[in-house]
Image 1 (cartoon, one colour):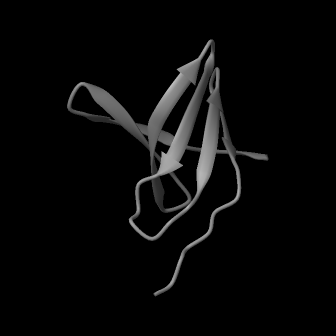
Image 2 (cartoon, rainbow, N blue to C red; image 1 turned 90 degrees about the vertical axis):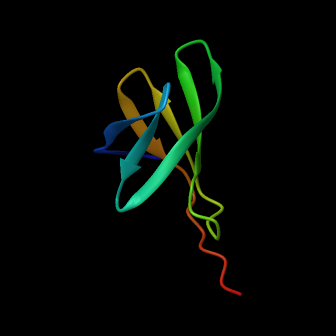
Length: 64
């Protein structure tokens, strides 16, 4: 995983996170780690937010 710059965007009572033209939403939290999943309908990407470090995993766009 590689650390990336990101921004937090308040949405309702939570947040979404923007990084490299992709949006991520939190799917679970364990301690100081927030696990994120890509919001785009054809994306299977994931990321982690550890303290203030945004770590992007594999991003795959599924083409139909």
